[in-house]
Length: 511
Ligand code: NAI
Image (cartoon, rainbow, N blue to C red; front, top):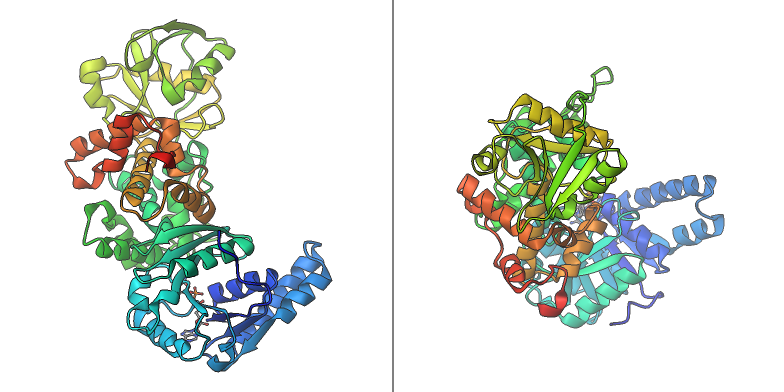
C-alpha cells in the first residue's frame, strides 16, 4: 500500500464550482493547505465565502466545533492566478467537461508544477488516456472522480489511463482513503464503474414503462419497497435531470460503438425534447407544481389468503416467505422436489420469475400460474410485485395475492413482462458488473463498493447476484435474450464461467 500525500503537501484545485468547492473542502478537512483557482475572477473567493457560510451553519447545529471550522477555512486560499498552484504536490481539476479545454489546462500546468507533482481530473465522462495524450509526462495524469455532493459521498473512482504510472495511481488511491473516501481503482473505460454499471437501472425501468408493465409511481414503489433502493428510477432520473441522465447514457452508448446494451430510451428522449427535465424544470415523470397531486402506486385490493399451501422443492431466495406463512397461521406442507421450486394452493402455483413470462411458463406448468418478482429481503419488504399468466383464473390470482397480503405485503400486479422489474434489473446490473470484471476495468470488490458508495445501492450487484444465485441470474439473462431476441441481454462469459465452475461472483481468488 502506497503512502498518501503528506498532510503538509499543498493541494491545488481548479474550478470552484459544485465539485471543485467540495474537493477543496475535503482536502482541507484532511489537513492539506489548499489553493483554489477558477478562471472567472472572484469565483474562487466566492466559493470560499459560501463554504464558510455552510460551515457556520454546521457549527450552529452543533455538528462542527468553531476551532475546526476556522482551521478548515484558513487552509483554503482562493487564488486568481494559475501560477499560484506551482508548489502543489497534487492538482485536481474540476472545470468544464470539455476535452480540448482540459487538455490545454493540463499542458499549461505541466510547465508550472514540480516534476513529481501529480495531476488529476475529476472528469466523469472523458478518457484519462485521451486527456493525457499530448502531455510531455502523461504518466502523472490520473482520474480522481468524486461524486456529488463531494463532502457526503464516500466514493472516489481512481482512474488509470494507458500511460498512468502505477505509483501515481497508488498515491492517489492512498490519498483519497486518507481523505476519508472509499477509493476504487478503475481503468479508463467509458463510464468508469458507476456510470457504466448503473445504466441498466435506468434502461430497464424505462423499458418496463415503455412496455406498459406499470406506471412510473407503481414501478418506483417496487424498486423502493421491494428492492431497497433509496429512490425509484423515475424519481431519481427526475432529480438528476433528464438532460444530464440522457446525455450520460448517450455518451456511454456512443463510446461503446453502439452496443445495444446501452441504447438510450425514446421515452426519455421525449421528455428531453419536451423540456420536461425533472425537478429543475418543474416536470419530468412527475409534476412538481405545488398543487399537483402526487400519483399513488397502484396495488391489488385486499382479498382472503388460502388456508393451506404446499411448498414444492427449494424456493431459493423466496424461502423466508414460507416461514412467514406458517407464522401467519397458514398450514404449510413441504413436498420435496428434484428441481424447480414453487408454492401450490388449490392447484394454482406461485413461483419466482426466471426471466420468462407467466403466460409462456403456464403452457408447461399449468394455467393458474402467478410469478413473483425479486426482493432484496422477502421478509422485510413491504411491497412485492407479481405477474399473472393470461390463462390464470381470477380465483387463483386472488389466492396468490391473498397469501402475500396475509404476510403483510402490498401487492403490485405488473403486466406480464419477462423477468418482471427487479429480477430483470438486478440480473442486468450483475451482468454489467461481470462484464466490467471480464474486461479488466476493475475487480469484483470494486464493482460492489462503487455501486454501494457511489450511488447508495442497498447491495453490490455481484453480491446481489450471489444472493439470488448466479445460476438463476444466468437463466434469467438467457430467457430475456430468448424473449426479446436482442443482443442487449447477452450474458457475460465471466458470469457463465462462474456458474459452470460453481463459484460465487464475489470471489476474487479465481480471477
Ligand atoms: P460547475 O459548472 O459547477 O463548475 C465548473 C467551474 O469551472 C466554474 O466555476 C467555471 O468558472 C470553472 N472553469 C471553467 N473553465 C475553466 C478553466 N479553463 N480554468 C479554470 N476554471 C474554469 O461544474 P461541476 O458540476 O463542478 O463539474 C466540474 C467537473 O466535474 C466536470 O468535469 C464534471 O464532468 C465533473 N463532475 C461533475 C459532477 C456533478 O455531479 N456535477 C460529478 C462528478 C464529476
